[in-house]
Length: 286
Image (tube, rainbow, N blue to C red):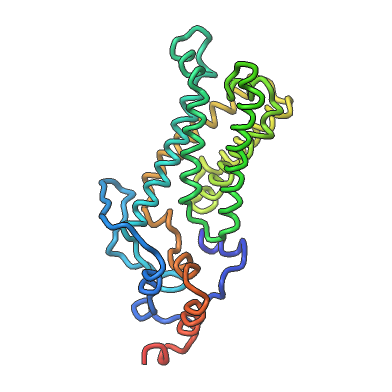
């Protein structure tokens, strides 16, 4: 279902028809191998989310299977999400701890480092995320980059001269959300994609909670009680979201690998493969 929805978001190369049986369909693996260098070494771990590398899946442009590089990329993608969630959870906990509490004071003092770690984890996940429509992926990455640059600029030009940290400055000056907000917009796009593809309730709710809280702070229309309530919901859902990623099969985060493999081929090989897939079955394998 996720494949069908995302393929409609922007034009992709023409879908072949008619189709040969999956056991006879020409594979993209040999052509792609000439154009993707991959590090050697097997990655194995225990758990429900690991891949069965012996299974061959039927894709739009041919059969495909999960390899070690896929496993590594997906685990790094999920590790980035866990880093972002853990950093956000730790930094946000300071809002619920009273002044004078040693743990709360330590969190508030280290809030900028936690924000940087979370932004780095999110950036890693945005590099490795699998989205069929490349411009959407590039747009999310651009939002993240703009937010990071805005955060650095806000700290250097506004917060530091006042002797404040970035997080404290943004809390005290809501207008600074214009500069750091794109990073959270990229996060909103990521959880929207996850909710759309996998029907995850926590991701779907986060798609609304994140912008509502940030816009409420930016506009000044939301009181502190409402903001704390939404922040608590964000913390809880983000934790569930990151933890549940490891319950998914590896193949889910890959999607239809044949689409990415097809897009990686030179134009000549794309045309040749499409001709094979569109030819009558009896002519393909003479």
